[in-house]
Length: 231
Ligand code: ADE
Image (cartoon, rainbow, N blue to C red; front, side, top):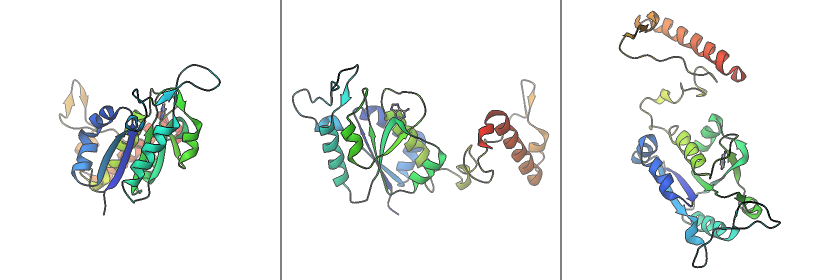
């Protein structure tokens, strides 16, 4: 199978590559299940200053991302590969990102993510490419890069062979795995006693059925206490 191709268009490729070069995103690339292509769309801007933003028509605070360099860059990047790209625009106005969306995106052949900066995108950018507009939460970031990285991380860890055990992505919180949409149960490792706090007896028992039962109860209890909206 061909690796998932992820294109990220950003004015700060260094910010993005720093994250992709560590931990799971890096391991996924080294295993050959994903390839990352970063493009600085300032390279597609005109003039000595290579401006990518301009003042808003109608006045008001802040600058707006210009359409020309973005359209040029997107077209250039799309032409680099004949696989169809799922087009993601990072914006606080988008639909909220969640585990189901991560799962859906992990099944695509190619993702192209556009990271805005400044106050907003010229509306013609929005109209341009049939974007899936995605927000990573109800807060405003200085740009879409952290959003693109959140999506990339959540997606690539779902690709086959990236995590050590196949089920470890399944059992995570929201993993939609054997426990459904529940938060994860508590985990323990050695030592058995630490500063007066001990590992529950059942986990030390080696009794697999009892352990599974305890974990499911704990997962339900946690979800009830912390995120009843998930039940
Ligand atoms: N850009 C700025 N804020 C954002 C958010 N919350 N999600 C995605 N992209 C963004």
